Image (cartoon, helix red, strand yellow):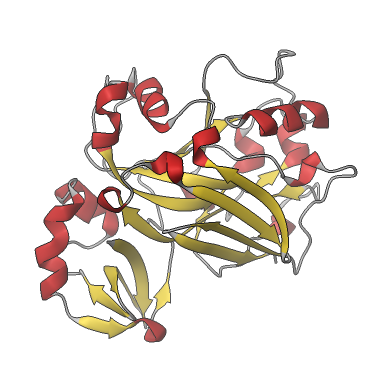
Length: 288
């Protein structure tokens, strides 16, 4: 199933896509966060979806599936080998130890206020350094929470998958010698358009990620190319941090980001970024 958050006039509600309609899941919870907490096993939602009233998809606006996460988004740096080498060559990795391939997952976070939905403009003007870059990523949404989750049990804690654009102000990232400020500017995390529940993606390593900027294919990779796979990321983060229902993990970006070019191809006002991962769909955002 494909779960969404939608706006119908002044009302914001959780829903599920059913053909060219949205099933209104307001009776099941006030938000997708609440629904995920109540139904960490997605298949338990089937009865609620079947009974829910329908709205024409064309009559509503899709927002980010989780418009305001309860906590920071967990992110993973340098998690595709080709991108790790690209980042090392760029000179922007101020945290580099001289090794392009990390020996352990590089974890950082983005503030909840970064999240925007599909077709919402990325506020590039908020970056005073004019070095806005894109990073197409697979997002993992936690269903059943926990601490000390093993690799073997990790996928059983996944509620579903979405698409994330880990937008970054590269100069801020480099100047501050850490990644939080350059990646946590308001509106710098487009998310969506849906969460596809885990029962529909039995093997996430078979997913393909592609990113276009103004119609030019920039990123084209398989999730199987991750250095640290999804079970490893869940195990690593949960060793000392309790994962909660609705937590989001952005798994890393492949080669082809703007700073990988000579000179860098930063995003400009009017540019459009499309990130596609099927069966999730396409996350599309212009730059303000």
